[in-house]
Amino acid sequence: MQALLKLSQGIDAFTRWTGKRIAWLIVLAVIISAVNAIVRKTFDTSSNSWLELQWVLFSIVFLLCSPWTLLDNEHIRIDIVSNTLPKKARNIIDVVGHVFFLMPICIVMIITGVPFFLRSFQINEQSGNAGGLPQWPAKSLIMIGFALLLVQGISELIKRIAVMRGLIPDPHDSQVSALEAEVEHLVEAIEKK
Image (cartoon, rainbow, N blue to C red; front, side, top):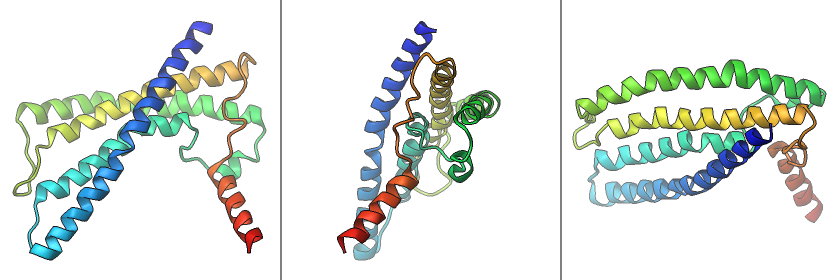
């Protein structure tokens, strides 16, 4: 199990490193969006490639940062229900969720995403919009994003099993949920007034 935990640490480090860098593409997407809007309003001209580039940048961030979201335990769940359950039940739900839902959907998306990308690449698929971008780079994001999510899912499964066996402390025990952080922020703001 120690070898698997070392593997998990390596996966986590890679996920955090790539996520922190890829997230900056949102800033680039906002700048492109703003410049495109200004040019469109000021000069009454626009380019489909700039619009599509915004979508591709958002897609990159959404798909390639999803493993980082999983790593930081910020993925979607029903916290109101989850927080009322005992820790053991939450651990079991995480393991079952990873094994029977997350990993299979990642595998299906990779298996279907590869031919989807390859067909697009082979014909050098272009945008249906005049002056648009090639489509195959964006289509490659599906298989890449789900492959990275699958690898992070494996890391999360390793850690959850180690937590359940008592080999490591729960990495999310000291983490404040987004909801709790927001409540604390609101309470501080009210107390300042």
